[in-house]
Length: 297
Image (cartoon, rainbow, N blue to C red; front, side, top):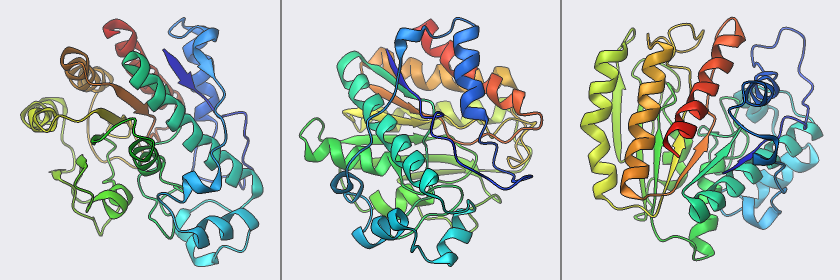
């Protein structure tokens, strides 16, 4: 299994900024310290070139972000201050998603300790997302002839409006999103299937709804599944508003990944959101996903 990391691309943020950038490094360190991953399973991604990113994004948006002339209004929507470091970090995150998907095609499973940046649209980013890694990956794999059809399973607590904005009209893409009904983004873009959850939804109802909806995704017969395994449905998450337990999240992962493995569908993991306080709850939950991976694969 190949798992890609990009936390060596550090991004300067103002003191007190609410985005927990350190979670990426802490997760990589925990996965190694707990023996969940071996050092030889971790890879640095290649930075994708402009013509790969612009499969999903406009050239104008890419260039303005690369050279720092990006509209300040877009920077405010993204919620992260512009820097050259953020540009390269965002490229690396997409590169990790591409490497993870290629690993999945080769051996059934791949991982990216970043990504799941599902709020980025073709001409702008928002919600801490600069480039949409899943959209770039899918369009790149289709262009290269590596796949014909792809599905996204997006279980981040926030609806993947950028995924649907870029890919929603593509007949070769199936998008499933299960998210908080009253949570960000407040203007949602319809997916193939959207399951909206009330505030406070817990393990039992969540898992029941997931079991009910998973079969439709596999009946569509995708060549690959990109799994956005955000851990912000956790009850301790400051932005989540749901009430899942760590055990509930691991059962969520077991259901999704178990179906992928039993049906022989390659699956590539993106990290997605996680904003618990303390951040160790988020890191532990992310690690739980990889514990499930190792048990199944």
